[in-house]
Amino acid sequence: MSSETESPDTSSDFIRDIVAQHVAEKRYAKIVTRFPPEPNGFLHLGHARAILLNFGIARENGGQCNLRFDDTNPAKEDASYVDAITHDIKWLIEGWADEQLASKPKGAVPVAQQINDRTDYQVSTASSSDADTEAFTASDYFDQLYNYALDLIKKGHAFVCDLSATEIEEYRGSLKEPGRDSPFRDRSVEENLDLFERMRAGEFPDGAKSLRAKIDMTSPNLWLRDPLLYRIRHIAHHHTGDKWCLYPLYDYAHCLSDYLEGVTHSFCSLEFVVHRPLYDWVLASLDLPRELPHQYEFAKLIPSYTLMSKRNLLRLVAENHVSGWDDPRMPTIAGLRRRGISAAIIRRFVIGTGITTNDDSITDIAAMEHVVRDELNQSAERRLGVLKPIKLVLTNLAPDEVIECEAINNPQAETPKKRKLSLTREVFIESDDFAEIPPPKFRRLKPGGEVRLKYACIIGFDEIIKDADGNVTELHCTAQLDTRSGEANSSKKVKGTVHWVSATQCHEVTTRLYDRLFTVEEPGAEEDFVTALNPDSLEVVTAKVEPSLAEAIPGAVYQFERLGYFTADSTDSSPGKPVFNRTITLRDTWGK
Figure 1 (cartoon, rainbow, N blue to C red):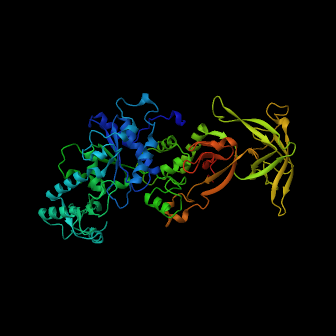
Figure 2 (tube, rainbow, N blue to C red):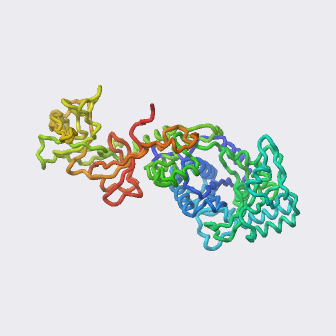
Figure 3 (cartoon, one colour):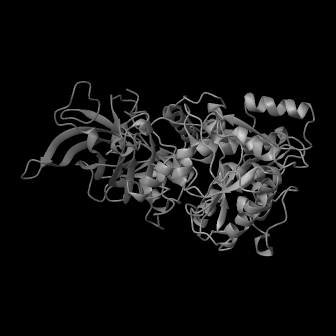
């Protein structure tokens, strides 16, 4: 199915079955989900599953999905990541909910609007300057979270601990050994309140004290062994500035942020199964008046030959193994977009992988590559380009002679459009399309052979011209002009067809030949994933292309016939000087 007719409907899965049951029971007045990225890097292909699941379920049930930034660790976060994430999500889901309006539930909120609109559940804490903020942030709730922490202390459920991070880890125990109580666990409520307020006031240095939940140091679940709720960090926050030097931990802030926003279904990856008891404990310990959210887990999307860890992707960027987060070899949404992979392609691939609880499943990247080729075959116009040219002289044409030919732009269309090409005395063909000593079954140009120049005519080989060092500089051939379309011998058959461009009318463009970034299926399993980098993941060539491509619009995707799909780079292209990125080859070269 092409992207133009992509259905917003998806097959059922275990999570949708759960939600459907709750809707049938009328358990909630409104289904509310959320997507809570941390702004410490760019979104990648793995995030697309969570985005489409959360926004999709909200849309399918006439509900609401909140984009909420989990910005509780200012040491690793930055406003530039907030901007990038917001842009990527809007791009990924733009038009998704509107592709088949008839199938959209009555009252459903358009997905793009869900990002821009705050909901009825928004707690009014933002200043007037934040009134037009396009997303929720955990930092919006820092005041409420602090007050909830005071309530936990008053109830005897939390205490201020003076142990260092190293000592806390030592006291925690292991899966085989129970932990030990902190010597500060039995501080009085009054003392804990006093210390916690002084922590907020900035009296203590980083790491000197922390607020911990008082649960059970003998629990078989390590996450319930008096986990940290707050830590001291004297560092400015990209959203709240210098207002706080006390920041909540994810497990504490996440569940309460869900509650404050009225989230009904909190979907997480399977790694958070062991965190769910803590999620529930925090909420249950506060005697909250409204209905509580519930957490459900699903398996991550992990394509082969790819890394999905933001920490590892950051290392690739920091160590200059790639040009940036949006390098077209990266699995980031920005990188995929720059490579020429559309939002509809990503949606089709991700939705097609389904939602499961199989945490060991690796998705073959070839499945996505199949979707890319299938979609671009339908949408990309055809053009001629030569990546590694060798000059060919048609000796029976005069130096200024021009033979007009007609090429097809979109053979996949019911009514294909055509364009004009100029066949001149000198043309370029692909160097791989000639062999002086051809291998067996070589069907391209060779001494004594004939091939067809696509859209033009058959040519017969005459001679090779070499320089003093024996390098081939030109090929001389004869153009059989009577084999052109509509001519007397147009039906003459030859075994090979090659692409070409006029040497005098072509345009030179920088072209980047991208390939898979890693040489192994599971680079994350390597002792050092950098050793698995593909040294041939990028080759830069100066290609010769037909003149029309000189005005290619950034982001436009074309099929260079017989070569692959190429996209005019959105960053480095300039008027009249496009830079092309190879999106994908025409065939899978990794199959064997």
